[in-house]
Amino acid sequence: MKKAYIETYGCQMNVNDTEVIFSILAGEGYGRTESMEEADLIMANTCSVRDNAEQRIWGRIEQFNRQKKTRPGVVVGIVGCMAERLKDSLLETRKVDLVVGPDAYRSLPRLLKALTPDHPQIDVLLSRDETYADITPVRTDRNGVSAFISIMRGCNNVCSYCVVPYTRGAERSRDPHSIVREACDVFSRGYKEVTLLGQNVDSYLWKSEGETVNFAELLRRVASVSPDLRVRFATSHPKDISDEVIDTMAAYDNICKHIHLPVQSGSSRMLEKMRRKYDREWYLERVARIRSVIPECGLTTDVIAGFCSETEEDHAETLSLMEEVGFDWAFMFAYSERPGTLAARNYPDDVPASVKTRRLNEIIELQNRKSLESYRRDVGKCFRVLVEGPSKRNPDQLCGRASNNKMCVFPGGGLATGDYADVKVVDCTSATLICELV
Ligand code: SAH
Ligand code: SF4
Ligand code: F3S
Image (cartoon, protein in one colour):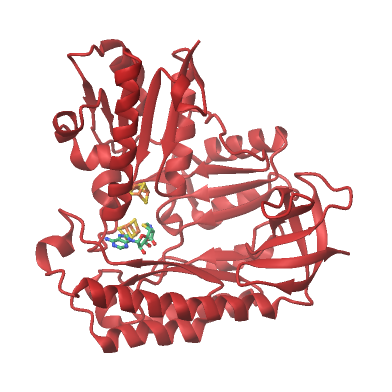
């Protein structure tokens, strides 16, 4: 049997895409390997969201190509967002055999057949309707407890800094019946948690023959698969998260009480320029609404430091918003100009690198303090945790997440991966709740 090795970069949607690719390759007789040295087909499923994401991947492609030198016949491919962004220029500059964009994975069998050393193959066509709905992903998670399910692809927003709409194409929602079927299928195979994935899950909308399903309705359907199946989702968009979604979360015990709600900036002037279509007040109102309906809800965010023309006042507004909301944790980035985006075409990338770094460090420092405060507030509380496996730091202990998405570690007490554990928090760090079984 031939073997395929895929390294995955970027967001969770790419993790799920890699699983779809393995499923398509299985139909061609390729098994999955975790060792590049024994693979006949080596691929990187890539991310273009920031320049440093791409730089990291270039180094790996060099490594892959070295395998070709020692083992003639090995095929090297670039798939995913960099394939889509850079298209055929990759064939010249990187000497790879295969370039396949996010909507073209079904053509992999055809491309592999047509491939010869002198004829590299490329397919970067974007699609208006591809959702891979009928493909059962080959799960690549290690614990067999938590599965990702893509519910939509692409993005119809035009946040001015963001390359995703260009690499992923237009937004399209997947047939809800195939989503529920996939959730039932993983549950019957022992999984206890599904995470519904999309760039903007709140705009999920499926219409067909008199049936309209929005995101709240989809949540209800997936949550109804079983009370023992936990449901998570990402990413929510502040402009679109509806009261109906918040109320639905509150109504189902098995919908986890955690929302990843990227704010990007605390300055309304920056948000306008980023084309996020909400302002600071709107964001704070959504947070207030979430907290009034679900007081225990975990809240996390993404922040960009040093977007075009950002002043010290704008930056101070980001800090004050983070101070006010008190997120549990955040992904924090320095702005990275992406070729072809609205911002790259219209606004100079004029915040000096040293200023971006200093602002980012201030943001990180503040968030570390707020994370510790947030985790400390949970000391003394009791949570139900889904056991994911042994703790990485201390294999004698187990780890798993509380509903609010915080990682808990606790003594095993005869429990196994996939069990639910009732724990009490006795101590914490800024990223882990240290617990006892109750
Ligand atoms: N769809 C999601 C985010 C997708 S990209 C949303 O709208 O929230 C993940 C994160 O990467 C973004 O939230 C943003 O914080 C960051 N990001 C995107 N483009 C970036 C850029 N050009 N420079 C720095 N960070 C960026
Ligand atoms: Fe990018 Fe904005 Fe779409 Fe998120 S919503 S993927 S940030 S364009
Ligand atoms: Fe990166 Fe593409 Fe995801 S650019 S963040 S892998 S959609």
